Length: 342
Image (tube, rainbow, N blue to C red; front, side):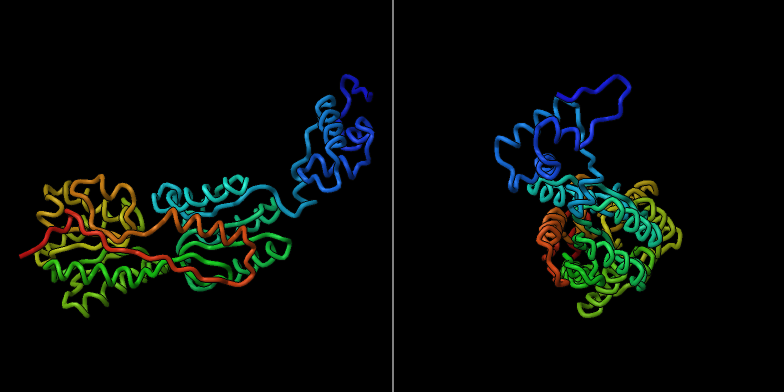
């Protein structure tokens, strides 16, 4: 039996192999989870030897040997946004089923930070990378280059939300969903609208606001004011406060391009002594869980967020080489924040 003296260095793979009476290759296969060409007897010998010596496998070395670790790296813009946490739930479900662990990194909607994170992750060799969130701006070449290098080393990539990168992508038709909402609201008796939107560099915001305006133009409604603000609850609050300060009494309904902005807008109405839904109707987009908890419950466009995450991890783990594009459906949900007029 090999002895480890006090103060000696940590036991190595070779120590375990000698202790078990097997080759280093056999010990390596037994310890890294591969039982190829390892008999049950030798597997038991190696595991017992590792336990006696207190051997801990070098996970970084295993990752290098296998080409990846048993992790999935999820990159999101803002984990505090329920949209991303719901997508993450679907990804975790799929990763758990595959015996993988999910790690998460947050970009803060900064393209440079997203690029930096992908570059760092290449060194950590996750089994797969999933990017979730609206593409920012139109120049994606640097990010695509980092992902190509990661993929060339055996990594797998999938994207949630905006198409544009040459990888399997799960998305929704933001424009068409907003058009359907506009149709429903005009049919509900509304004619004059304001839109609260995020920065124009966010493709999701742009598609939703443009789709809503196009739907209104076709259905007989009109956008009479548009305010650009942060893609957050505080952004919605600030924009609604500004809108109220303009004295636009002709506006019947405010559409915010995501639910957290809409909830912030409703808070601003209450701060001004007004009642959402009664004094001014409000609608959002996403159908986050809080949409039915606010008072009144929020009219919105339901997005299958957990299903998007689950489908994305399935595509990533399948190792799909082609940039497959998977569209999932949305649906309009009318609630008390937009009571019928007339």
